[in-house]
Amino acid sequence: MSTKKDISESKVEELTVRYEATLNDPYQLVIHARGGISVDAFFDLLEISAFTRDELADLLDVSFKTISRYKKENKHLNVLNSEQILKLIRLYKHGTEVFGDLDAFNRWLRKPSHGLGNIIPTELMRSSGGIDLIDEELSRIEYGSFG
Image (cartoon, rainbow, N blue to C red; front, side, top):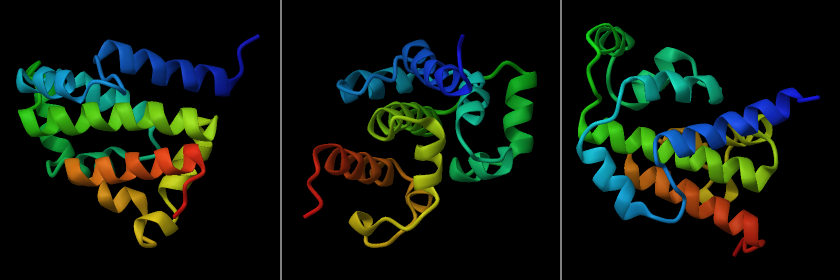
């Protein structure tokens, strides 16, 4: 019998595969983003994250109204938004592996992190570099290096 936790973790894995957001190949991720990805990725990420639709749209620096229009018109996200969504999906995969639970990772994202200068991780998600910093912090947590 599948639990909510199993379904959540399998959804994260499914999105990582569907959008080719692998943990170990950032080059391919950037190349993939160049073509723009389906706006469906926004809605898929919304399902696994603890963000509201407006919060997630705000992270991408677009309005939810624009995202809805893209969905209606079957448009793709631009390169920057595509890269950011792919990196966020990859981050969710890593975070779920580190914390062992999607809900635990979502909670951690909303609390100040000592390794990030007591900044709340979600505040760094507006930029590709910020997502990288969160991912590096996850690796430090994963390997017990809190220096």
